[in-house]
Length: 290
Image (cartoon, rainbow, N blue to C red; front, side, top):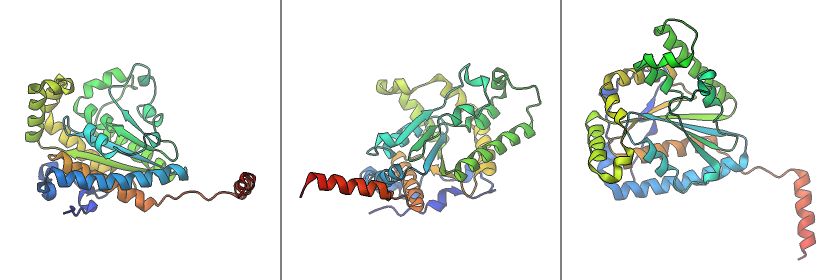
């Protein structure tokens, strides 16, 4: 049985008010089991790979995939699994942590501009420019290190940043980069289970960061910041998708389905050879003989 997925069920419509406390973190089809979900993912990854090859060959448009979520929501594993089997030449993953001393010398969007995908490529932001309106909104004290002009950090400050993001993404779309944004929506209970597993399992100790527990104390603050970001920045051309993430296999299938649908809608194709190239090919074929 293949899960039937209506991707619009997960899309945040422009201007919609989002209440993450009322959104399910587990899709109904998660009970299909890991074997069937992995099979569904493999089928979608094959289609993803086919479309990526066409996008790369066409060399006119690009795709930017943005991944956000609470700690332990499964961002890293989702990126790994969804892109498995896809030609690594055609995409790049960028992880955004705290900006360096050099990066804070520029506008806060500067480092994101520098890592955008080239034409024909797929760029993946693992965390992104949205950290600047989520993490910093929860921890405004971090702004002191950013060398910003003195001004009140009030609602107008955050509204301006959100407007900057919309303008940034609108510009990308108008210039041929499709933007898909995914929020992996994990429940507090499932997050606790995953963090506990990291502490108990020696093979997962490397994943644990003490800051994860500190961030958990601010769960409601992060939730409200994300809700405000979704309402302000989910647009018709750069939509947010809230992905139920308590089941990692199910979340990956949903994400892959959304990506494949978006690429199919773009419908990239192998470019036609120009007259000069056709003439050169004919000459080379004659030189090889019958």
